[in-house]
Length: 219
Image 1 (cartoon, rainbow, N blue to C red):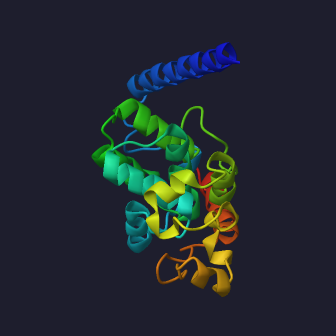
Image 2 (tube, one colour):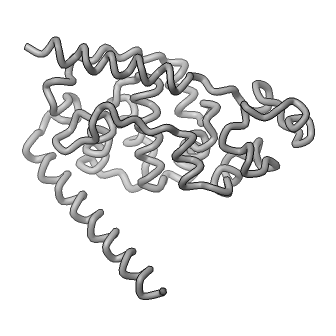
């Protein structure tokens, strides 16, 4: 059992080193990638770039617990797990419809382990604009990601104290919690903790249309 765990950890570490080296090679090959999407098909996306939504993402006040916990961890510690970097990046780009460059620059300001090649590469991956990026129609559902990677909600409780009293049943989607339970756990959604600032399903449809439109307008 222990050997298997060590072996998996070793494999994961080696994969991350490969990603690091890959992004450094791309950084040399595409010197303008900090300011320009590598894939031409997605250089004309009409981002909404709502500054109020961007501020709420920065502060961890989105109403999506896993996003808020991750962003608060970044703000408090200067670090964030790679899985959380992917989730928060996807949320900013594909739920809030904000230009990936805004997020990349914020991470540059906040990350203690900031590396230009890896950070830019990661953001272009999340935005589906990089050389080996995730397909644009693959959009992380923040609630599903939360339930999968923080099943019991321990990470959320650590960085979102407003939700600390909630059981796993409600901690991933507190907005669905009945008023009776909100009073029981002494957390009123919309007052003590924000309601979701966007509807994931609706934003997904808007995002897909924007990417399709950008592809059609390539010259």
